[in-house]
Image 1 (cartoon, rainbow, N blue to C red):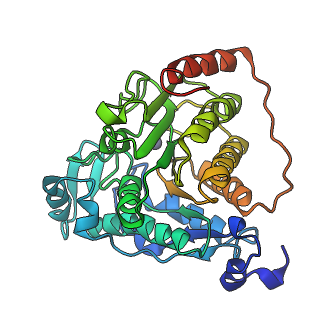
Image 2: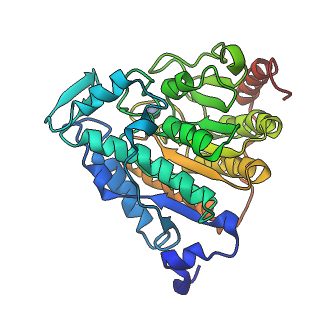
Length: 361
Ligand SMILES: [Zn+2]
């Protein structure tokens, strides 16, 4: 792309609306302090923000300014008891909400801002400013259950976003794909009885938080609208790519989502200190391509990525660059193909068998 187009305004005038990308990148989100040595540190976002301002990406995305989610918006997902518990941490130097979920004086405000960032990006996308958005926010959210904070997460940003889109835009079908290496237990809990959010999670198993077995598939009217893909340590790009293409895409084809949302954690990265998977930046890129394809086919291209985990600085930077390059659609579109090796084939067959109770795959 030439220099003349390198301003947000120009980026917004991209003639192909499907390729318009909005991003939340706000330094106020750094003001949540977890203490020395904690993996969920502000430096994660600082590293990503430096990539967003690099020559490769500067000026190619529309900045989306976050706002604070209101209590009412948060209470669509969380109980009042949980909301008050986080609120009461305001102004206190240090509070432990569980063994590894820590707050500092402004964490409550930052958590409301992170959730509100997702709401603002939904408004951006439905307002026609861009079809694609990536919210680079923290604290992460997908472990936060309706009634409790856990796993570095205070409020469930992506779930609050999905609830807002259902309520505010009258949607009936949201596909929510979680590729963070940990199971999105909080998001699953928020929509376990509902067909309005099809929640699907691919994660290392066993691993924290211990949930996410394939038998967990929804309840009552939500049965078949939670799909879990527990994967063994060492799962690689080939397996993820084929899982997305051969299992999740056919499900999306039948579900016909009106919006695609993604819990995008980059901790399945090969060198991540909190997991043992073997995903590279190219793997995240092909998953993104698959997700964008689902959005283009069903939701007029509308897709919103929400950052979850990812604890290897270089991994975060490389994944961000490859995912955004893919979303901007300006890279030569060579197919990234991984042969379906025997171990991957077995895992895909298992996944298909499980999903076929509810969907044709
Ligand atoms: Zn994670």
